[in-house]
Structure formats: C-alpha cells, structure tokens
Length: 485
Image (cartoon, rainbow, N blue to C red; front, side):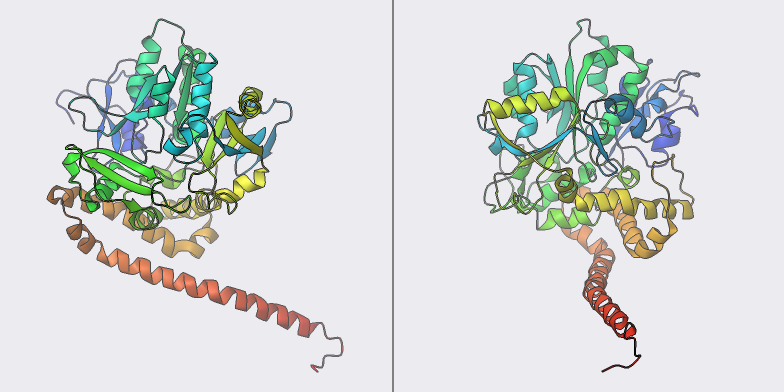
C-alpha cells in the first residue's frame, strides 16, 4: 500500500484483485471519476489495478462495470434487451442470440493472409470505416511507445491501413483504460466500433449503462470467441524457448501461416529488439501443451461462462471444422445478432469482397466443442471446488455441481495447481532467462499430466467395451424363454 492512501471496501482491489479474479481489462480505471486507479503488471504476469490516490468514499463505479463482480445485470439481461425483439432472432444456450451464421473469408487485398483465420474481422472493421458507419475503430495494436513495458495495447484507429496493420491474434493481456478516458473527454461525437474478448464487451455494456456519453458513442461491439486468456508469462516463455531473451522481446507473432499444411497448426515466433527472429514453434508443439494444461492462465477465466461474446453485435471465430481445417489460409465463422450486421455481410458477399456461405448454428457449436465443454460444463465442477476450498466468488449464471466435480476432480485440481504454480515459479525463475530451471521445477506436475492422460486413454478405450457389454446383456435378457441358445 502506498503511504497516505486509504483503502475502501467499495473498490475492485478489495473484491476482485484480492481474490485473483481480475482479467486486467482496465475498464475500472477508465471510468474512475477521480482517476485514482492505474493498471500495472502484477507479480503473476497479469494486468491489475492499483490505487494511486484516494478513492471517493461513496463511489463504487469501478465495481459496477467490472465483468467479474456480482451483478444483478448478467449477460442474459443485456443480450435480451439488445437482441430479443429483433425479427427472426433465435437463441441457443451455448451461443446466446443469433440472427444469422456465416463461414468464409475476405477476398480484399491481403487480409486473409495477414489475419489469424479468414480475415473477416479485419474485413468488417475496414468496411465500417469505408462506408462511414463508424468514425474510429478500437482494437489491439502493437505497443511501440518509448519506454513501454508492454507488447500490445488498445489503440484508436481511423483509417483502413492502420486497421489492416493490426490484424492477427494476440494472446496477451491488454487494458482499455486510456482509450475509455479519451472517448469520455472527446468533444466531438465520434462513433466507435470496439473489438474485444467476451468479458471486455460485457464490461463495456455495463459501463455504457452508467455513462450516457459512452453509450452514445459506441456504435458497434465486436467480440472474438474465447476459451481463456494467458498472462504475459505465456508469451515470455514461448519467446525465450525460441531463443529470444525476455527483456529483448520486441514483437511476437502468434498465428504465422508459413510452413503449415493446415489451419490449427500455425506458428509462434518472437522477434528481438535487434530485429533478429527466434525459431518458429508450431501450435501442436509447446504452445498447445501449455494451453491445454492451464500454464500461466488467468484464474478469472476458470469462472467465465461466456464463450461467444453474448453481449456483442457480431462474433468472429476460427472455423475448427473438418471441411475447413485442411485449408492453411484459414476461414472465419461469424455469428451476427443485428439486421445491420447481416446487411453488411450480405452486401460484401454480393460485391464479392468476401466469400461467405450461411451455415447452421449447430456447426458453430460443433466448431467450439472443447471450449463449450470447458466453460459451460466443467465450470460447474470448478465452482463446486471453489466452494469446497472456501474461495470467494461472485454469483455466476452457472451453478456448482458436485457430480461434475467428482467425475473430473483429478483434472480440475491438477489444472488449478499448474495454473498457480507455473505463474509462481516463472515469476521467480524468469530473471535467469533459462527455461530449463522452470521445467525442472515443474517436473512433478508434468508427471501427473502424463499419468492422467494415460488413465483417460484407458477409460476412452474401456467405455465403448462397457457399452457393448451392457447392450449384449440387454439382448440376452429379452429372451422370453429364459434360455440362452
């Protein structure tokens, strides 16, 4: 605690940061009327708010806009109010509301090659600017500011060339506080399109409820599908494994399409301040292992059940489907929730600036089956476990379920342990710029991963045999004579 600063119980630091539930979005600092919050790196490699001056006694605005606080207003309430009355709207529990679903790719310039998947998010943003539907776009860009300690930040872009340069996935913490402050103090009534993860878009909707100026100026809300968000340690570790020292890492590319034969196995590469590139690491190697086993992940992601940005006007995702994955150029899947968005997409298809085909919502759901299982089903077990260890949590739309926990307790406990210990150990060992020390320290958990995977493989083999045996026994039991011939 800084000298002279008095802590207040109506502050995000007391509820959210203290309980390791902060995702680092920065909305709290952006809307703070006294500018008493600043977003900085934590010891766990995440962005979190810190108090730099006294918080107003009666103010709790930072809590009211936090996507991980206990709100009476949930994603369901916001989405219902925004989209429920739209003619032709449909609803699925996994995805939320949807008006139309598309699969395809951009045919404009080099958007598809530069983007993580089919380039349709970049296409959509450029189209909004070209057609005068928005004045500016807010999205994640490289942070090239002098003296910065971050690789990426939210930026305000007003031309298609800057939008095109911002294309690509960034699996890295970013926060929006400076951008929100700029929107609120701007005298001109600019119209903005905001791109973010589901939690940010939910928090933005909460902020718009309390700040009329923000509500007037945000014209489009765009989300990407999200399974989880790693801390900066994920990027540091991969960059160092590729040969680029941590404090020399100047730029990273997460979804390089060169050298891959299919979508889903894109490459990661870090680039040093001297311009020298590290070695290319493909997804199916180390990145996938870290991701699947919760290395360096935010704890808040364990208690989020919004995969498809349910409070966004349009959602973009990778086409993880058999018919699209063999194409290394990538394809985008899109959920549109407003007539305006559907019209923009259909116009692009008619003008042949993009290739789109309508697809069934069931294919969208199938494409994200792993994320849905994790964030709609397994979360019930994690909630039960959190209850069991007396961890404070805000109310969630999903209820704790003992059956889910006891069926998956080994997986839940192991991943929680890896998440916590990987961040703790890397915080201590990262200064050595050697991954070997870290792997040595994580060896007990790696052994548990191998053992658990072995057990699950056996179960996957045994379950079909068990079902066949039960079916055979039932056939025997229906023999009316009671004799087996």
